[in-house]
Length: 133
Image (cartoon, rainbow, N blue to C red; front, side, top):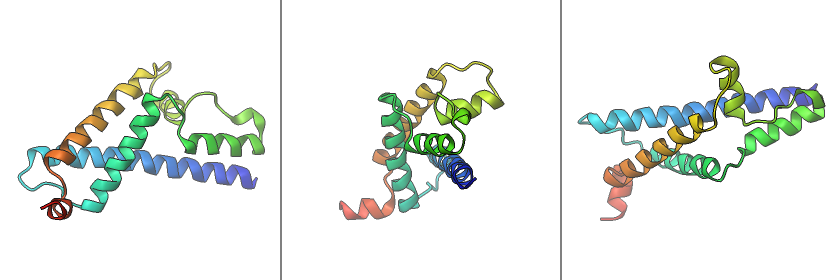
């Protein structure tokens, strides 16, 4: 039972991570058109590092460590409850898409990563800009 609780906690953490990545992208995108840019240096730096990590995982076709940990915990709880595909695909497929191509995740992830990198270069957070002056 403890393994199941830990696995469920990993799902919640994984979902929070995905929200962080999406919210960071939305704030960066909104800042692109607004006069006052979203300039929280710690948030933007963590988001940039996170999206680079996620993008690298996607490009290397590796599973997220949270997916692996969740599967290990679920296997210890009950070997029949794991899923053979990635976390995102598994849950989005159940909610929205009956049959999803991995490119549906790969392409937007790469686009978000490239956009985030470009925005970080064009408009770095003020604290980082001051460090390089």
